[in-house]
Image (cartoon, rainbow, N blue to C red; front, top):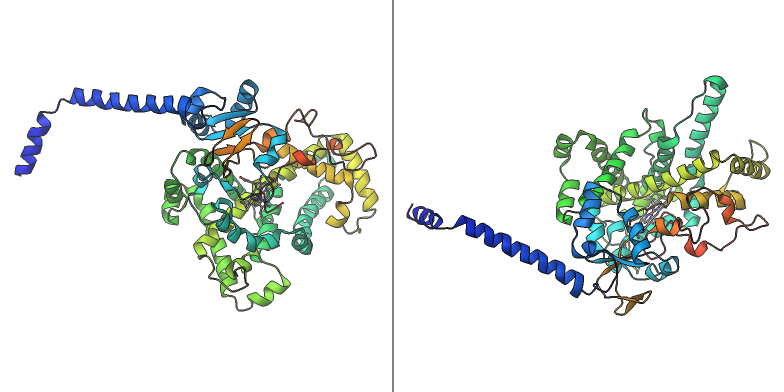
Length: 472
Ligand code: HEM
């Protein structure tokens, strides 16, 4: 009681106006001195660029939260004003120079994805995409690498064809059963994504999600991924711990807060059950011999000497399943989409491709395999052009500089700071590709109709360093 009355009497003597003014003054001088330091004295202060972006994270905040997803366009504009090397946040340098890409994203380089950027996608979770240091990255990537080799995927070709064939059969049935004058365009947006995830789930768990057979073609799920992707911009402004808590809310709370989260919760639960089944199935070993499943190996990991080591927890594995699902669905979906749109909306391309395919596969009974398809230069050119136009990853891919004397186009970037470039600016670069925003597969062929290699150095839809896409 005595203590309370003493506290009240003390507070009675406080000059609140003075306290508020002093606090505001201290805060203002802290902000001003931070800005002055970042603009003129910071290790990145010599890098050109807009002063506001160097002084504060508010510019990025504006493009993440108020005008979301538009920072890449603003950065492109800034490059036109300030040159190929610019500072875009107090801590990050952006480079737009096609010949420098391989300096930033070196094959086999030991690189660290900038945690300030990546850990805000989903919190500090235990999955490949977000692995921080090289050793952790290797331990997560090695068990998967083998599954995504060309040889392994080719062995799985029959299952891939089975899922694609479902769409072909659907189109055939529709064409045969509907008179031409009442045929409507068919929306392939969801159907393409269904194929991608039906194939992925078959490969990962030995059991397909069967989205193609679901009444709404997985619409809820794919729309949820879109919403989740949009919320990433907001997550970027939170701490990894906050993001982790939001993305790992107990299912019953997540569903109360946002009923549309049900598909996310269901996918994680389904993945967990599928992984649990592989773990507990006494026949898993035999099944694996007939039918490869990615998660079998993840449940039975080995060290470099081949000795068994404890697997990750079921929760971590279902996070990994979610990570792979998100990484594969829209990127592949958009790539296939851009390719089909390009082919179908350019009659010359359509006619030429159809003629080449007819030549390679003369009858409807001819077996279509990737081994034959990849020998048709125009087919490969159409796919490359679709990957170029769709870009895969539009956002940045920032890496932490590890070398002490790292120089980019005459600018020194100290160790520990972040440097990035943009696949979008590489793949739509006017200096490399004439008319870069249009679908022109012919650009990949020489005068004899063979694939040339002029652009290979700049063709980076899957990235180039040790963190390049595992699914390529
Ligand atoms: C056309 C399709 C695809 C494109 C264009 C694409 C593009 C990319 C790019 C550019 C990266 C590097 C991202 C970064 O550093 O921030 C990446 C990483 C990754 N992708 Fe893909 N991707 C595609 C399909 C897939 C598929 C089908 C899977 C899996 C089934 C997948 C799984 C991953 C994973 C796990 C990583 C992280 C690799 C690591 O950090 O070591 N992607 N992808």
